[in-house]
Amino acid sequence: MSEEQKTEQAVAETPVVTTDAPAAEKTTEAPAQAGADTAKTATSDRPSRTGYQGNGGARRSFGQKPGGFRKSSRFRSERPKPEFDQKIINISRVTRVVKGGRRLSFRVDMVIGDKKGRVGMGSGKATDTSLAIQKAFNVARKNLVTLKLTKTNSIPYTIDAKVTAARIEMMPNKERGLVAGSTVRNVLELAGVTDVTARVHSRSKNKLNNAKAAIKALQVFEVVSEKRKESVIVDKKPEQKGRFDKSRGAGGRGRRPAPSNR
Image (cartoon, rainbow, N blue to C red; front, side):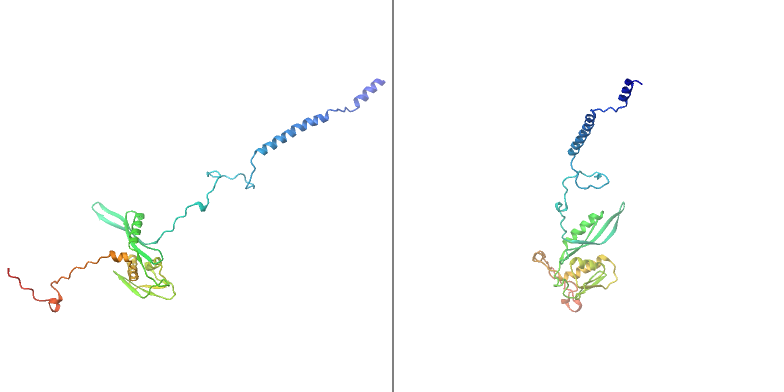
């Protein structure tokens, strides 16, 4: 082998060193840096996420309105408390026979009271129960009774009353609470009466009559206002002497006056 061939072989075996490698690295780094900058700008444009950061994805509104001002309970208008508490003691169906058949209606018996000494009872009748309830409430409000109770919200003395076949008795007790049953208890609770024992001496289970008897017994302790006294006008008819007048003798049987001569 000649010297020329040896030199060519040595040149071919020596590694080739290129000076353009840093430029290539720079070119590869430049797109990567540009991509990072674009990613930063994209993330900076997005709104920062606040609130719930847990897993599970975004929360769904399920058809509700988007977020905004949320009204709390303090902005809602509270319903005023009714003046009277009411209790329905009986609902019955009433049929009326007419020429074309029968007409069905409902009768509602109701007791109302403010638990401060006022109580009333009323009945209403209509083809619809809601309308019958409204009528009963209006009637009970017209028939309110204002009671004069003791310091312990009890009655001063024992009293009894009778309505048709219903007969009840009320008596005060000392710090025993309200001892009563049937609709009498409902009337006394709505009137605000405590420390009273009530007994139903009759076998009548008619709720309406028992409630009427309780109202009648409490009317003894009613406070009559001046306006009501003025509105009540009592017209007494003059006494007429009839056939059985006691002034005519024993038993009211006397001689008839002689006919006048015309």
